[in-house]
Image (cartoon, rainbow, N blue to C red; front, side):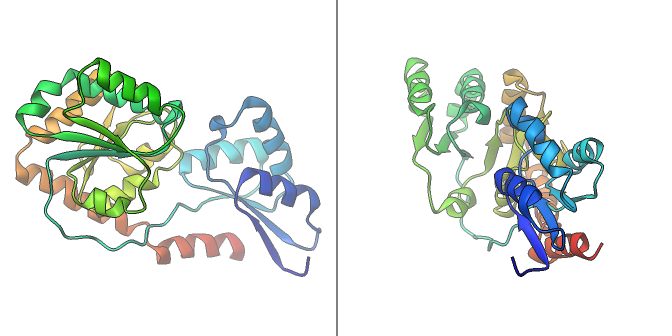
Length: 269
């Protein structure tokens, strides 16, 4: 390959680059998942291959420390970037969640939390809209029906207009059991949403300071998640506004120019 630098953008590509690239090429493996999200056997294959790369990039500092310890080669934090316009439209009393409808994304935890505070949501005229497709869709819809939540909860297919859906909402919940970075957190903050997620995940803990620019409930604790949602809904507009403004400030740290500088540092070092 006639190139100076070869960059892999997912684990399988990184392994190929590590095993087959010429010694004259500078090799960089971009890692977009935390290591524990992979099956254990694949983790071992990844670590052994990555030792032959010249550098690794991770999305979070916590992942950086893991790969540094296991590979002993230079590791850099290069987060995802956000480059979306802010849509100025009136807000609705609406909670939104979006992603693959799979176990690791925790939408079942969200529904159980909503069930606990359903009366409050009805009193405040709030609804929850979930956007996504996946294997858990039938189970989630069945739960909604069985627990008579259909008047306040609805599931919709994945949408190409997520920024618009976020812009019209007030709260975004990211209930993942495992979340590597969570670009939707930045997308939601950018559209003026207050974001609620779980502790114990590298991405949310990197992006959210609980009580400052969003909220982090105890890991997989549906009562705690329900309390955070209730507290945001009942908070005075002035208090909600402070969280939103701090979210806007958070987004500025992930602009294309800032992330570009992070990546150039990988190459120059």
